Length: 249
Ligand SMILES: CC(C)(COP(=O)(O)OP(=O)(O)OC[C@H]1O[C@@H](n2cnc3c(N)ncnc32)[C@H](O)[C@@H]1OP(=O)(O)O)[C@@H](O)C(=O)NCCC(=O)NCCS
Image 1 (cartoon, rainbow, N blue to C red):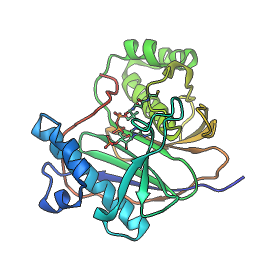
Image 2: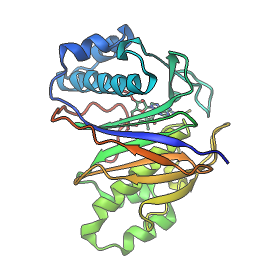
Image 3: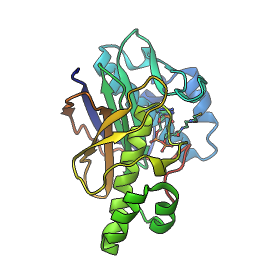
Image 4: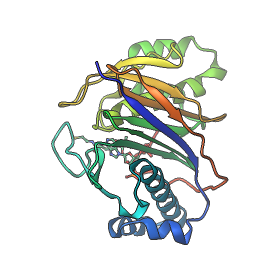
């Protein structure tokens, strides 16, 4: 058994990306930013990337602009196009996970194993449709027994747990999420089974408290006893959403 440590950083993004933010990004990131048609989405991408680089640079003791990103092969199909993101340079064992919802960002870094995070601003969703499409039978039973006023929050809590696990496993959310059971009746910390390729098959998933109206989760291999350095380094920066893969709507 090894001990996995994760540093979890919740952040608030600005409504505008600064000149300093832009200077931190690579040419590839600028190209990606330019592909967003809506200015708000471009801004969100740039500010999010700059925030991610600053968090990682602090952990790596380097300059944010020096970091070169790559991708590990997808654990399902081996493609380098959509596998989990990785740090190519400087040479490091550091694994990270990044998530953004509106102006909320969550970054987790771990020196000792894969890690996954997801953050979502709680917003109205068609609970019944979502439950049918993405919840396990036991999760649906749990939801059906909840009073209606608690179902939205519960659905988002289940959702971020599932996304955190699928991101830690490297496959992403293009899996049958009805088969990823995240024990919604338990709060704080649960064990979830989900295996792809050589990545671990059991995950410890923790709810991360990032404030009212927002829900978030962290997933680490379950053979760990996760220790947290959770620092709420928040600024009053804001931005808008630019999501490539859609959470419930
Ligand atoms: C990973 C994924 C769940 C992200 O969810 P999302 O709700 O759209 O967005 P989030 O803000 O929470 O996370 C985005 C971040 O996830 C990370 N990410 C992307 N692909 C990932 C993967 N395979 N594993 C882990 N993390 C991944 C990136 O850091 C990304 O940030 P970026 O867009 O700035 O590069 C989603 O992009 C996905 O499912 N990707 C597809 C993977 C795929 O194609 N699998 C097919 C297997 S054959």
